[in-house]
Image (cartoon, rainbow, N blue to C red; front, side, top):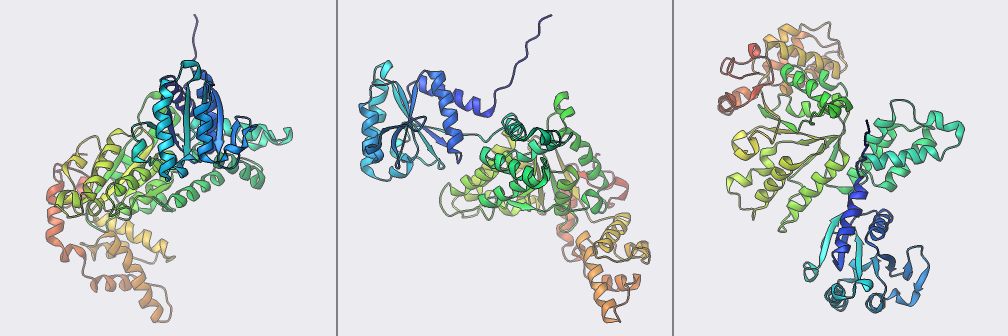
Length: 522
């Protein structure tokens, strides 16, 4: 029996195929958006070879050169002279224009390029020419919008990163190759490098080999944090060290998350299981929604990225949407990752409340909804909301999120767990505290309010001779606190009423408040 093994094309090969098709179709101007000039040129070389073109280059320092850097006309460093070389050439050739985007601010240069775009498609087939602009900006002068074909050059995919890793290890002396990539670390190192440019990945692999004498996934992952900081559209958050164990209660949510984690394994991919899209946590402020987001990142071993849509808003039409799309694209390149949308209703509330923001909130909502529906990468979204009335129905429909959970005020057992965790976080002894008594004394307290009791009790104990805190210290601190459940009782009641039939309880039903007990299906 004959079997045929097919190899899936890499992201770079697919991009080269697109460019090749555009060249065969006689498109005169192709606009490649990337920060990787050298890699983009390699992709163009592959594309031109497939389409049957020779290749040349122009930049403002060397003029026109062959692909190997050999000078054709050094006097053509002036942009007009370079464009004249392309116009007067009779060779079937693609010209890689390294610096052209900067010169297009000059109306004379812009006109020369427009003239070329009009003339080149009608040249004889054996004299066909095209220009490929490599630039970091996707903004094309409006006058060229009808001529230029924009392609976002993708970052290296998993297969390409694997090739870079193998090349880095293969260049080592023979006595180092055996220990440079220990068993079990290769896949982790590749995952850690996804989202980096080829140059960044090569540099990071080299740095890891020099400092650790092996490929260390943790060292590689640190480079991602630098990339996120450089782009300034996402915030890298340190996850909760204790993971899900550091979150008191919410056992139903935790069990669901543990089950979904398995979907990111190679076995799940081989089984055909799709990666989960995300979860929406709705409920009472201060009850562990944001804490859960930080815990998921730890439990799943993924970076935690926070998208602050309010910070990305701009007064310029379209710029806010562009910033959000850039952030979402960056999250996909860093995947697998956790994308945290905190207090979502505040960022997009203007889209449903008629805010006079010129449609900025509506644009932001549209960008988010389209991405959540169409994305295919391994980005798990954790969205939190305190006021569900400000969330549009289209955001809540099935398919945007895998599940919607309602997070209520903690139960008696959960309050004891939260106090235990707070004692541990503050370096206090747990065995000297009656956790049940504290839980009984705080029936309406949120998790944040419970956690705040421990520092309050420590102030009291420190003022009393720096002694250990006691159960009475914590209970007295609770008596001096007015919980949110009293100051915002109407709001919390409305949240609970909304949750009935619309969300799953994050805690077990038997521990839920009477108003929703048994009403939510696990």
